[in-house]
Image (tube, rainbow, N blue to C red):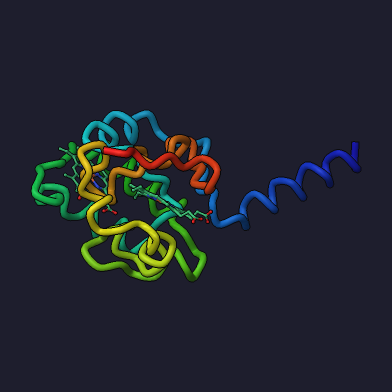
Length: 152
Ligand code: HEC
Ligand code: HEC
């Protein structure tokens, strides 16, 4: 029993340190999927720090050119959950311009091989469209072997 628990925690630990994983926390409220995944994927909270999430959640009426405002109950529930699971790792928790994951320095570094015209392909359209290339991004898996870049 004790041994298998140890092995299990070691596996969990190594998953957490791997940069390519940003798993969705298991206590995700249903409201997150309903309210925050209708226009784009449900971004894993660990890809931004607390300050960016607070800033996003306090400006939902002017959200990247859309109105994504919520009633107070959902707004509070989602905000608290995002802040709880925001990244505390230096790399991901640095305050990013425009509250964008895609404007963070780690994102720009990791994607330096993607040429400017590739982002504009019809099958991609925007760097924020993670799922166009990261086929298992919805499960928080961003590993190289799970990437397929649309040819058009
Ligand atoms: C009405 C549509 C809509 C809803 C609902 C919506 N968003 Fe967005 N969101 C957008 C658009 C449009 C963008 C910009 C996408 C792009 O640049 O391609 C965006 C971008 C984002 C980004 C930045 C992506 C990047 O570039 O790194 C985050 C983070 C985000 N939304 C979080 C949320 C959260 C949290 C919620 C729920 C409270 C939410 N969104 C609900 C439309 C929406
Ligand atoms: C045009 C396709 C494309 C889009 C869209 C895209 N990525 Fe990537 N992503 C890549 C490529 C290519 C790499 C580099 C893989 C490599 O060389 O290791 C990468 C690398 C990554 C890595 C590092 C993986 C590792 O092995 O360490 C993460 C994390 C990541 N992307 C997250 C995202 C997130 C989050 C989004 C959306 C906000 C996104 N990506 C949008 C293609 C894309």
